[in-house]
Image (tube, rainbow, N blue to C red; front, side, top):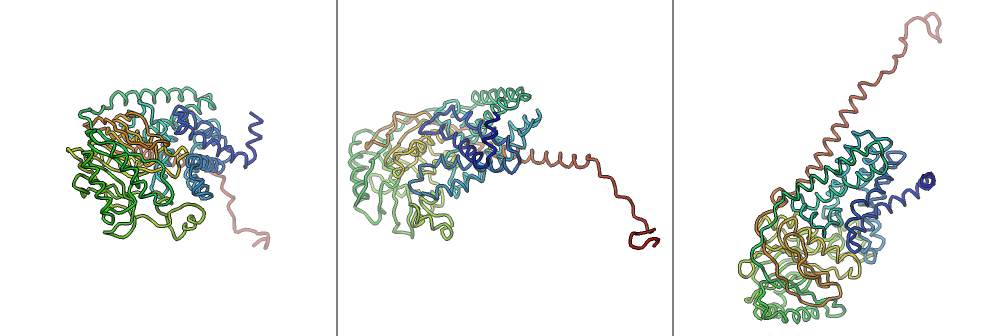
Amino acid sequence: MKTLDRLLASPWRRSAAAAVAGALPVLAFPGPALWWWAWVALVPWLLLARTAPTWKRAAYDGWCGGFGFMLAMHHWLLPNLHVFTFVIAALLGVLWAPWGWLVRRLLGGAPSVRRVAASLVVLPSGWLAVELVRSWEGLGGPWGVLGASQWQVAPALRLASVGGVWLLSLLVVAVNVAFAVLVAVRRARVPALAGLVATAAATSAAWLWSPRPDAGERAAIAVVQPGIVAGRDSADRRFDREEELTRRLADRDLDLIVWGESSVGFDLDDRPDLAGRLTALSRETGADILVNVDARRSDKPGIYKSSVLVGPDGPTGERYDKMRLVPFGEYVPARSLLGWATSVGEAAGEDRRRGSEQVVMDVGDGLRIGPMVCFESAFPDMSRRLAADGAEVLLAQSSTSTFQHTWAPEQHASLAALRAAETGRPMVHATLTGVSAVYDANGARIGSWLGTDASASRVYEVPLTHGSTPYVRYGDWTPHAALLTLAAWAAAEGVRAVRLRRSAPRPPAPPARTAHGSQARPGH
C-alpha cells in the first residue's frame, strides 16, 4: 500500500493511473464484450479519486479518467482523425472533472454513514448527468453510454424497457460505488450491502412488473450487404453487386428489402436508369426496397443522406432525410474554428445537410417502418419517437466500412438490441459491409449476424408486436430523476453550509479604541 502511495505521489504517474482506470470500462463493450466487467470496472477510478489530496486533484483525476475512457472508446478513430482524436478525448474528458470532485466530496477520508448512503444515489446521478451532456449530437452523441454494455443481458434489456439505457447506466454505477465502499470504507460496509440489496430488489420488482410486448404476425424482411467495394467507379459497382444480391431474393414472399447506408451514390432524379432498375427489382421480388441515397440532390442545394422507398411503380415518395449528422465525419462543427481538422485527418470536406423531421413509412401490406441512418440508432429519443408515432419495425441503415477491422461495427450493431428492448419494437440494422443484425422486440437476436467478411443477402422472419413499453410512454424519466437528485443534494449541502457558518464560534472582538492617548501624540 505504501509503495502504491509513493507511486501515486507523482502527479504524472497519478494522471496516467487515472487515464488507465478510466479506460477499463471499455472492455465491457464489443469487441471484448465482457458485460459483467462493467459492474466493477469503475472501482479503481473511484478509489483513486476518493484518495486525492485536494479537491482540485480529485477534479483532475476525473478529467484524466474521462480522457482515458473517451480515448479508449473511440480509439478506432485514430487512423482517420489522427491527433484530433486526442483533442476530442481531452475536451470531452473535462465533463468528468466535477464527477471526480464529487467522489472525493462524498467518499474521501473517513466518510460517515450518511455520506456513504448519499454516494449510492448522488454519484450515479452525477455520472448520468455527464452522459446526458456528452450525448448531445455536437459532442459526438451517446456512443459508449455505460448502460449500453449490457446489450446482450436479457434481464438488463427488460429494465431498458422501463427506463431506457439511462436506467442501466444508473444501476451499473450504483453497484460500482457500493463495491468501492466495500473495498475501502470498512465502517460503511453495512449501508453498502444494504444499497446492493435495495438495488437488486428494485430491479427485480421492475423486471417482474414491466410488461412484455405482445407478438402477433410476422414480417419477412431481407437485408442486402454488398461488402467492401472500393476503387474507381465504386458507387456503380456497388449498385451492381446490390442488384445481384437482391435478385436472388425473388420468390421469397418478402415484405421489405433493406439496403445499407450510402447504398446508392446518385440522386435518383438525376439517374432515372438506377430508379428504373430498382423498380424492376421491386417487381421481380414482390417487395418494396428501402435504399439510402448519399448524393447531391437535384431539387434543393447540398448533399443529403436519405432513406428512399422504391416500389413496383417506382419511388413511392416516402423519404427520410438524416437529421443528426456525425461530427467531423459528415460535418465539421464550427468549421471556421475547427476546419483545420480536414488537414490532419479525414474530416468532411463539405458539410452535409440535415433533414427536418422523422418519418414513419407505409410499406406493402400496411407494414409501418421507422427509418434511421447511421449513428442515429445511438439516440434513444429517436427510436422512442418513431415507436410512439406508430412504427412497427425500426430500421437503421448504416455503413462502418471506414472502420472495418475495428470494434466499431460490432459496437454499432449492438445498439439496435437496446433500441428494440426500449421500444418493444423489432429492429433491423442493415449495413454495407457488416455487421448487419436483426433483433426482436425483447432485444434478442434473430438469426445470425452478417459479419464484416460477408457479401450476402439474408431473410429474417421478424415477429411484429403491439402495445407500448413504459419507456415509450414516460420517456426519459431516469435522467430527470438524476438531475432532481443532484439538485436536492446541492440544496441540502448549501443549507448545511449555512448552518455550520451560523453555529461556528465568532472570533473575539478587537479592543475598543478610546480618544485618550495615542503613540503619536501622548495625552491627546
